[in-house]
Structures are given as structure tokens and as C-alpha cells.
Image (cartoon, rainbow, N blue to C red):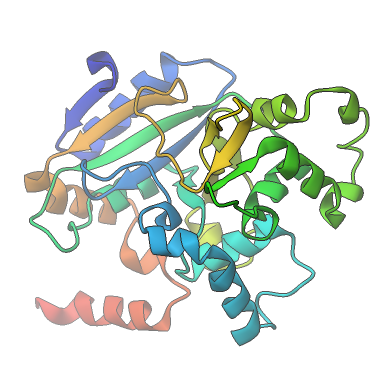
Length: 295
């Protein structure tokens, strides 16, 4: 469990803002903070691709079919990370986990009803990103391209050395100086070093919704393990982020009984379904209807 000192429970948006400030003040002063709101405290910090083994098994098919169905949207000129971000936006399972630069946007999502079960307390995770990653390293695009690079053997593993060699052949790697001088180092250690900890990444905001929600992402590589020869390799699973990971600066729990009240507070601050999904005609019209439903 997360350190109790970094876990708080709130019942109002005003209290939430106060607790966010406390968490930020207690963390590294030059770090960047990102937020993840989940409607249930029971949900793991795991992207949609990792929640269903069948999705992960067919990751390549999911991407290929989207490109086939909508080649004008998912173009072949897009980098792998850009493709995943757009797929994520349109609801296709990917190895990306949504986070946001806005603490209030995260609170909105934490206050949503829990799907397919009795309602649960919501939660906002506060992430502290110390990576100072100005642009996405080529290896991150290789991870995003895992569906095409990883060729699993009968033991359901891929050596990091083989991943490295396949990565060097990709156009997004060749177009940078990222590979220069790396052949002298241990290939597995190089991959392991760059993929440690949550991978906070940027991707172009192709849509209005991405811009409004101030979206960012956490990219999940396959879990790193060792084979029978003690070689570092990828397994065929994704591992959730541990709440005790040093990147998790705090956890704020929103009582299920207070969700509606908090949503009303957020509405006065301009955070509503209408404002966050204003690119959706259906939702905009629903918002218009709701304004007069209770007159």
C-alpha cells in the first residue's frame, strides 16, 4: 500500500485543491505533476491493453484493422506513438494510460459512476515526473511499436538484445542520432535502463478533446524478466504501476457518497462533461437538454 502519509480522503473540490497543493509542496520543486482520475479505488494502474489478455494477444491486429478501416485518420506517416495516442482517443485498447496536466480534469473522472458494479470510492493519483523529457526518445517509439517488433518464442519471451537489434532497423531510429555509440554497451542493459519506471510521454494533440483535457500518457512496455539462461527479456504481459513507485507522489480518495456533490462544485468551475467532450455533438446536445430537464 501507498504510504498512509501520502493518502488522503476528501469530500469537496475545495479540500481537494488544498491537498493537491500539499502533495506538490512536499515533492521535488522542479518536477512536473500529472494526474490520473479513476472511478474506483479497486482499479489497477494499467492500460486497457493489459486488462484483457486477448487484447494484448491481438495488439497488432487492432492497429492494423484501424489503419485498414480508416487510412485517412491512422496514416502510415504517423510515428508509432502518435498512432497509439489517436487510437486511445477513439477507444481502441492500447498500451497507453491516460493522464492529464489538469488536477481538476482528473477529479472529474474520479467522480464518475463505477461501471458494471456497485459504486466505489473514486481516486486521483498524483504523479511526479522528474524525467525532464523534452522530446520522446526513439526507444519510446520502439515500445509503442511493440506489436510489430516483438516476435515471441514458444516460451512467450523476447530477449532485450533481439528487441534492440530490431529497433535499430526502424526508420524512426535511423532518423535520429539515438543509436550512435550504443553498440559498445550491453544491449539488454541499454534497453532496461531506458525503460525503468513509468514512461511519461507526449504525443501531438490531433483533436480538440485531447487539447481540452490536457492529455498526456504513460507508456507501458512489456514486463521485463529473465529466461532460463538468465538473459533479460520481455514477457508477453504488461505489469501495473505499483502504488509504492517513487513516481506516485500522492493518492486522493473521493468518497462515493460525495461524488455528486463534488461534480456540482466542478460545474461551477467549468469542468463538466459538456466542456471536456465539446467535440462530441451528442454530448453537446445532451448538455443542452440537461440545462432544462429539471426546470
